[in-house]
Length: 284
Ligand SMILES: C[C@](O)(CO)[C@H](O)COP(=O)(O)OP(=O)(O)OC[C@H]1O[C@@H](n2ccc(N)nc2=O)[C@H](O)[C@@H]1O
Ligand SMILES: Nc1ncnc2c1ncn2[C@@H]1O[C@H](COP(=O)(O)OP(=O)(O)OP(=O)(O)O)[C@@H](O)[C@H]1O
Image 1 (spheres, rainbow, N blue to C red):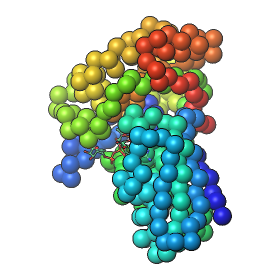
Image 2 (cartoon, rainbow, N blue to C red):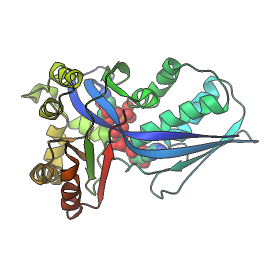
Image 3 (cartoon, protein in one colour):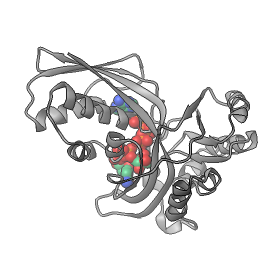
Image 4 (cartoon, helix red, strand yellow):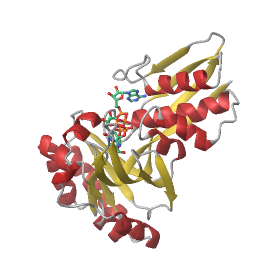
């Protein structure tokens, strides 16, 4: 038997950091949503008790460092499954981009193996398992739009933002999430984005107010370390995006665009500057 799962990318419409915790993680408040740029996972049971990962992408680990492998190992260990699985990852989400590609693959593997092996694990339990694999994994299990607190694993679902076009541009640099949090100093922050203002904008379906209230405090680290990300934000604004923000720890920058007529101008303008540009929609 085979099962298939989609693993969509996430963007952070708002990312605030409160403080560093004693366990080394940071206490965050984020508003996250999914976009329709997705990896696709094919999972097939194997007669032998083993986990095999393959992918057309040459640049990700295929061994126990792969987050989908870790998801399969975790579910097998925790639910005493002695069957094997072959997982093929059709990668479409750029890697180390701030779009949670690996986390979404892990979440899709948890969902898919729950079905393949008919384990009957609840979504809450899948989220708890996911939190062992990474802070973004629980949100990737549930999808939708949510406020994430704690280190990212405490989720409160909210309504979807007003529909718009999302232009993603990833400059050709890799950014380590651990490095960005490591360099972040909450005490030096002069401005925090407003979660209540963003929530109100989403509730009212006000696209203009969603754009006005975008905010990500990790930009203070990444834009300073990589001026090309700041430059990319400026270019996106100048090309006419209505709201522009870096996603997660970067380096991907996303632009929200209300009018379809503006999208191709923004896409073409960005392509002159960076190779990886995608035009997507939010998943509602
Ligand atoms: C930047 C975001 O992607 C925004 O959605 C997340 O906050 C990070 O999520 P993630 O990549 O799933 O993060 P993890 O794999 O759990 O952690 C990677 C590293 O980032 C740092 N980290 C992560 C999350 C958090 N709340 N505080 C942290 O300080 C830790 O040093 C950790 O070792
Ligand atoms: N299935 C996977 N897909 C992509 N990267 C993976 C996968 N498994 C492990 N990795 C490793 O994880 C690291 C981070 O990749 P990923 O694409 O998840 O980053 P990201 O988009 O910045 O994540 P986040 O937004 O959650 O911080 C890379 O160094 C990559 O080698």
